[in-house]
Length: 186
Image 1 (cartoon, helix red, strand yellow):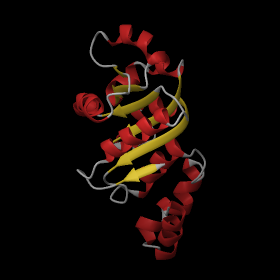
Image 2 (cartoon, rainbow, N blue to C red):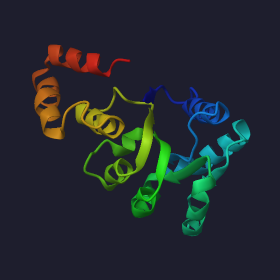
Image 3 (cartoon, rainbow, N blue to C red):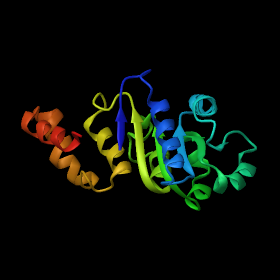
Image 4 (cartoon, helix red, strand yellow):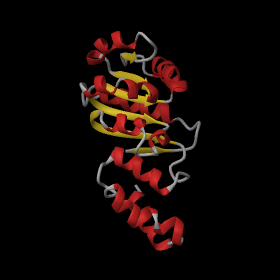
C-alpha cells in the first residue's frame, strides 16, 4: 500500500498503530522493517517507544549495528536507514520480514540507485510506502515506487516509459495522464 499525505499529518503514527494492531490482533507478526532517512531513525524509535511501547524495537544504526542483527528475529519492529540498508543488503536478504515500510519513499525514485536496488531485494510478505509528495514526483519516479510496492503492476521500465513517461511530459497527453491516474487511484 501507499500512504501519501502531507508532512506532519501523522504517517508515522498511523503506521505504528497499524503494526501494533497486527501484533495485538494475533494476525501477522514481525519482524517488520522500517527504512527511513538517517535523520529519522531515532524519531521512529522515539515515536514507537511513546505510542507503541508493546513493540520490541531494534534500531540498526551506527558502527555497532552488526551485533544487533542477532536481535532481529525476536523484534517486532526493526528500524534502519537507506544509507545502511545499502551496506547491509546481504544481511537483510537473509531475513524474511512480514512488512517492509519505506518512509520518505522518494529515496527510491531512481530505479537504478543502490537505495532502490537494496530495498527491492528485501524479502517481505507485505510492502508499504510513506510519502508526502507522490504526485509531485516525475512520472518515472512513480514507476520506481510502484515497482517496489507491486512489481509489474505498471509494466516493466521500458513499457512504462513508452506508455506513460514519454507521452505525458513531452506531448502533454491528457488522456494518457488520466489513464495513469485511474491505475493509481485507490
